[in-house]
Structures are given as structure tokens and as C-alpha cells.
Length: 93
Image (cartoon, rainbow, N blue to C red; front, side):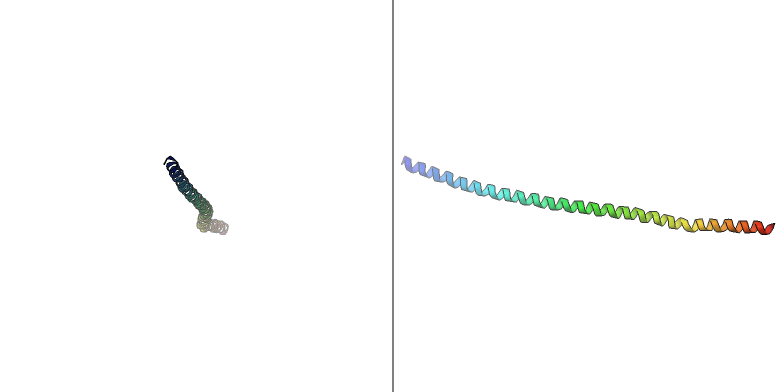
């Protein structure tokens, strides 16, 4: 009977080792998948950050250009005013 109990114990341990090995393999595979997914998400985040930075720079550039365009007519108005004043001064002499 003792030999039979030893065989049952050995079979039990073999079964337990097989179960734990399978579980470890599955868990390892799931961790690898999670890590790969994390890398994809990180790459996407970096791409989006770069696009955001580029759009922000373009926005700032366009905003500055708009301000310059808004100032343009005022500068032209000042130049015309100065020319008219010079002409008026010349004709008044």
C-alpha cells in the first residue's frame, strides 16, 4: 500500500507541476501581450504629442502673422497721413 500511495503522490505532484507550468506560460503570455500593448499606446501618445506640438507652433505662427496683418493697415494709414501732411505743408508755402 505504501508504494501505491507514493505513486499517487508522485502523480499528484506531476499533475500539479503541469498545471502550474501551464498557468505560468499563460500568465507570461498575458504579460507579454500587455507590455506590447503598452508600447503601442506609448508610441501613439508620442506621435500625438508631436502632432500637438507641430499644430501649436503653426497656430502661434499664424496668430503672429494675423497680428502683423492687422497692424499693416494702421501703418499704411500713418504713412499716408504723413505724406498728406508733407504735401499740405509744401502747398501752404
